[in-house]
Image (cartoon, rainbow, N blue to C red):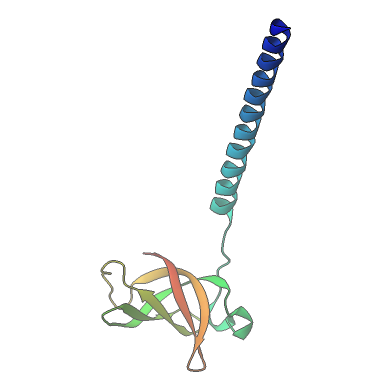
Length: 127
């Protein structure tokens, strides 16, 4: 009887180890898949004049040159201009930026409305 319980216990332990290995493998595959999908996910480039209220709360990407900028204690306000128009981009200060007029930037951010004008809250800046 003791031998039967020993083998039964051994059988259950082996099954638990197998189950743990399978669940760990699928968890790692899932995490890897999430990283790959977020890395490969591209944000469409928009011309500034094509942005409208339909884009509110959407993540967009624009390219343009710095037309003007202002620095406040907590953020930068940058007017970005492309061939089609101009928009204000708000960048919350994490670190100092070396901005100058004419500097070409690519901005990824969320479209918001402020004082009946569209603005972009920057999430990522590429110089």
